[in-house]
Amino acid sequence: MEPIRLIACDLDGTLLDPEANPRPASAARLRELAREGVLVALATGRSWRTALKIQQEIGIRGPIIAHNGAYLFDTAHEKDLYRRAVALGQARRMLAWADDMGIMLRCYLGFQHPVYFNRFTEAHRKHWLRPEDREVPGLHRVLPLGPLEMFLFGTYEVDLFIERWGLRGPGYELSVFQHGEAREVNVCAPLVDKVEALAALCRHWHIAPDEVLAIGDGSNDVRMLRWAKASVAVGGGSPLAQAAARYVTHNPDLEPVEEALRWAERTYRFAARPLRAVGEPAWALGGE
Figure 1 (tube, rainbow, N blue to C red):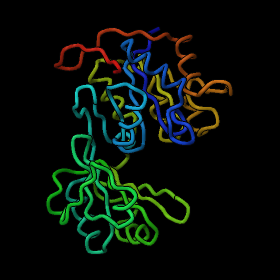
Figure 2: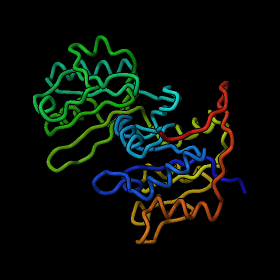
Figure 3: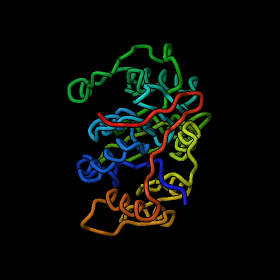
Figure 4: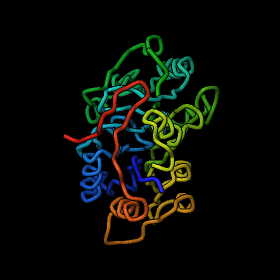
């Protein structure tokens, strides 16, 4: 039985507590494994910058799977490893429409780029502005590449957007989430999935699915859980995720990821060995 060389760990409902902070025992164990040379990849539907913040809070460097699998980047080497973006022409058309309607759209291009906006609302400028945010008038004319995700938040704005663009079209599809009276829209490439980026990461480091531990709780983790040889679903999470996993957490005295890591260590064991990327020298992942 092959040992575990790579851990792919979901964030919300899995590694993070209800306040979106890393659970301490789990974070400490992941940090320890990373320093021993096991590859630890955060795998989330959230944006790259949210995932990067969590990675920094844990105290590790290395691969991050973000935007639900549309994006894989490596903070240890500061490079992109995989991206599947919204078609550039389609993104520009949506931005031009948003300009005409006076609606703010956010565009994520990757961790080496600013987060671009066609305009700032006063609420965003006052409460939500971050150092990497850039307001670019006429963004539809100068957007340099297809975005990993376009983001819209609001009430009537969401209705107008869906009425104009529908839930899917050439080179894009929408996910809509309710937040009280408001909703958010995420525009991504069609059918993105965490398993695509995870498979690309494994190809890059010559790691087999039999050497991967996947941990998650949601329906967007199902294919990742099925793909990995070792897989753990969080008890109380999606029934689909639980059905796809080899183990389901159940111990109320342990954090879900802590329990998952204990199970994997008993069942498979963790083993670090030199990692060699395609065309690159070997290196070991570690925290600072």
